[in-house]
Amino acid sequence: MKLMHVDASPKLEWSNSRALSRDFVALLQARLPGLEVDYLDLSLTPPAHVSRDFAIATYTPAAERTEAMKAVLAESDGLCQRLLAADLLVFAMPMYNWSMPSSFKAFIDAIVRAGVTYVVDAEGNYVGQLAGKKTLFITSRGADLRPGTPFSHMDALTPSLRHAFGFIGVAEPRFVDAQPMQFADPEARAAGLERAQQELAAVAEEWTAALRVAA
Image (cartoon, rainbow, N blue to C red; front, side, top):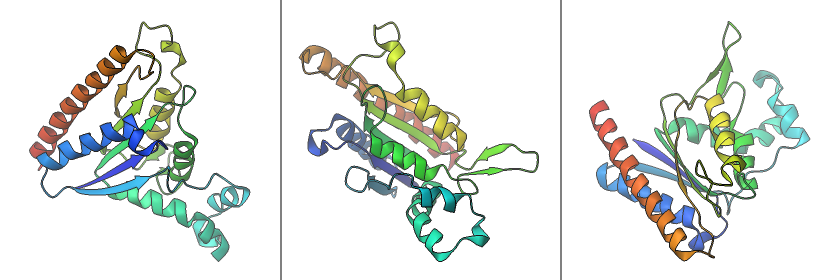
């Protein structure tokens, strides 16, 4: 059993999303002996943004790619293979200006690949290749974007993640959002963290039970 754990916050040891994802992975490791973790830190090793050469290479049939094209795609190929090899996916990030950090957007652009993480079948349907992988997004948000709050309509992060990963086969991702995390209200901040921790404990228990049954 392999889990891919991806962090995207540049705040490192000051990051709430990192702390929450680290604790969640530890919960799973305690419950699932032998769980292998493939860790990626996008703040330290951000993928390259899409370039002209990358775009040309991706739309060139694999058999016709030059060595230079293969080199341009090497990083993306590696990230795609790491995703495909994992059984469980955990992605953690802060919300920046209502959406994701640029490093995570670059990651998405690197892993949504025709013929790799999605294919087009004989009927012209797009078929994602990550189907069946349990997937969790852990986010931290300065504002409170829960339904019924003044900023609830400003959440561009959740639908972006849901649509991008849904296209490559993740049908039912889980979301745990720590909010509000602003320093102006310490009590609300503490309550937001506690809610997220409780939700993560429940997800860990749920995943563990499902994986034990499947085994």
